[in-house]
Structures are given as C-alpha cells and as structure tokens.
Length: 185
Image 1 (cartoon, helix red, strand yellow):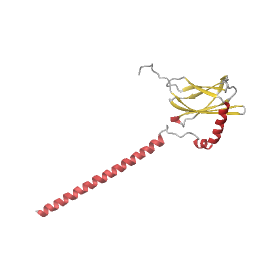
Image 2: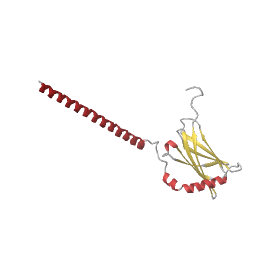
Image 3: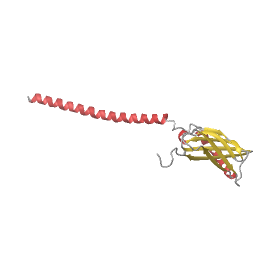
Image 4: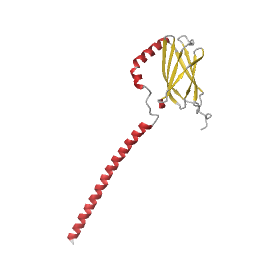
C-alpha cells in the first residue's frame, strides 16, 4: 500500500508541476501578447489618424528657412501692419470670408499689392488652402476659405508690390461664438 500511495503522490506532484508550468507560461505569453497588441494599436493609430498629419512640403520649407528669415527681416523693415478678420464668427458655417487689412508704418493703407494667404488648421495640416487675395478698398483685401474646426490656424501671407516682397507668418487661435445664449447649456 505504501508503494501505491507513493506512486499517487508522485503523480499528483507531477500534475501540479505541469499545471504550474502551464499557468506561468500562459501568463508570460499573455503578457507578451498584450504588449505586442498595444504596440500594433499604437502603430495603427499613428498611421491612420488624419489629424496627425505632416505639414505639406516641410522638408523644402526647412531647406529654404534662411531665405524665409531674410524675407521676414526685410518685411520688418517695411513696418507694415497686418490684421486678419474671419467672418462669420458662427459655428457650423464652413465658408468664411477673410478680410486682410494692411497698413504701412504711418498707418496709411497699402494699395496695389498682390498675393496669397496660405492657411491650415494645426490638427489638419494636410488640408492646406491657398487663397488669392482680391483688393476691394484701400489697403483691404478679401478671400474665401473653408474653415470648420475651431483652434489654432496657421497663416502665411505673401505679398508683392512692385519689386518689394512681403511675408507675414502667424498662428491665430480662432473660436467661433457659442450658438447658445449666455447662461444656457
């Protein structure tokens, strides 16, 4: 009888050891699998989310940065002041009118300039828009753009007047007026 019990205890220890091995190997495999799944999810989100886009032509812009800085330095010497107004200031209106007012160092309107305004929302850099500006009044230029999301918009104004080239870069936070009266949700 003792030999029979001895065999049963060896079998029980063997089974217990096998179960423990399976448990810990399963735990390690599950931990590794979860880690690989999280890495795969991160790669998927990074490559498929359209809001995580790269600024168009960023490499060439980097190469041309010295030229851009020289134009910006020359621009500062002109003393021109730029103001941009975006209307209508309402939510859920995709088409916006951009009013660009340009004044010289003395506060006089800058007339006869031609150029473009390039803009994009920071969360949608792939959707860059180039707007041709049309003069309507002395020193006031207009253009239309599709601007749906609120937030930071990047503006690059490039103007030429005769032989002068003017460049203006600015990031402007734009928030549309609430559709609800004050105090209501």
